[in-house]
Amino acid sequence: MKRGLFIGLVTLDCIYQADHPPAANEKVVATQAMMAAGGPATNAALAFRQLGPHQTTILGALGNHPLAALVREDLARYQVELVDLSPQRDSPPPISSIVVSAATGDRAVISRNAVDRQHRSDLPSPDLLNDVDIVLVDGHQMAVGAMLTASAQARNILVVVDAGSWKPNFDQVLRCANVVIASANFALPDGSDPIPYLESLGIEQIAITQGGQPIQVSQHGKHTQLEVPQVKLVDTLGAGDIFHGAFCHFYPEHPFESALTAASQVAAFACQYFGTRAWIAPFGEKAERKV
Image 1 (cartoon, rainbow, N blue to C red):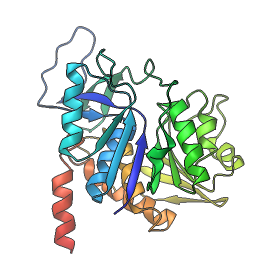
Image 2 (image 1 turned 120 degrees about the vertical axis):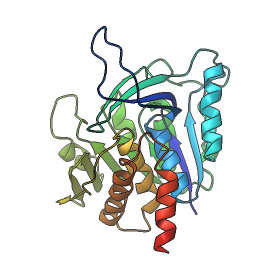
Image 3 (image 1 turned 90 degrees about the vertical axis):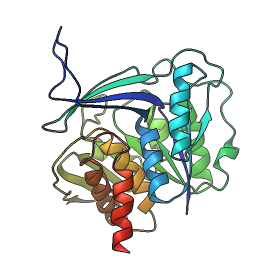
Image 4 (image 1 turned 30 degrees about the vertical axis):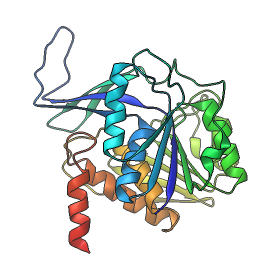
């Protein structure tokens, strides 16, 4: 059992499965729907907790609006602790609306994310890192992430960065990373290849995920590719987040490439289920059958 601290975005996700996303002025009837806590770091934390079980904390800005109670209840149900950066905030939490196409598993997302919830004052105490084994940062709380990753680096705590997209001052967090796992959409402000830049920061373990395409890997300057499982896609929402949480579960007990391969297997399994929670019980049953 490990203790993980996940820093970043906490949202309320409203997820629908339909034949297709609606066009302008079109109404579409969903075949399935669900609401859950979401956000890259949050989904990663939930996956990490379920694979352990580990002691798991998500640090983000939520507030006390009535809709925030739905997020708190979901996190409590899956035994993820929330440390709220803005507990007195009474405005609604960030809400994401997602439509998943039934035939392909592709998703269309509209979200406010944490653009107006950046926490800059009264930074949390570094004591949050006490007994923590691994920290994951998604970049949506940059000031908090920069401060805590610097403290984690000083304590030799593993730091994993989820680089979904470039954000202002991201370099402050990246410089403290042991591992960077980026998406194919991650691009530097100048449009250049991110791998040489990340290597120049001294990051020795880098992975670029590309959906169903092979993972690009840079390890100590050596470049390889890892194949990923091919499955029938039901829902790709949160697949990358689940991948990151699974990686934190497997690493560093497993070598870097082995942890990436195992994480890709978990993410592929999750893609065969609608929403970001339905995979958990079947995956546990599958694991038990292997014992």
